[in-house]
Image 1 (spheres, one colour):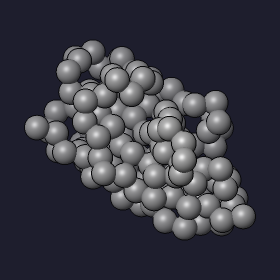
Image 2 (cartoon, rainbow, N blue to C red; image 1 turned 45 degrees about the vertical axis):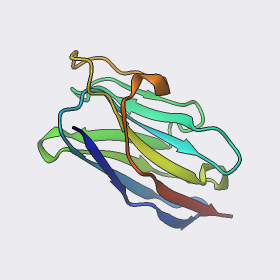
Image 3 (spheres, rainbow, N blue to C red; image 1 turned 135 degrees about the horizontal axis):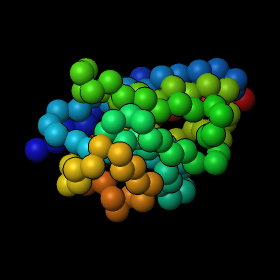
Length: 125
């Protein structure tokens, strides 16, 4: 069984930075961050392969967000810089436990079988 626990959300002014963490228990392969703003569907933000060598980003966050993972610490991170009010959302950590390739990274929600409870990020203008 896999458990994911997010932390690091909060309130920040536009232009500021936050770092989200996702602590993992259990075996996982590729992992990702998704977000859901009020009244909107959940959307992909970033994903990373188990090796950490392959990453994917949504166009809306490219150049501002960086995903990383420390497998020795069983933790994945999302470094968010130059935050905008439109980044306001609940951010979810997700993990795949079914595949085996250390190089694979996927952006579809359906590719992930475990999800965290979410952490709120609010960016004020």
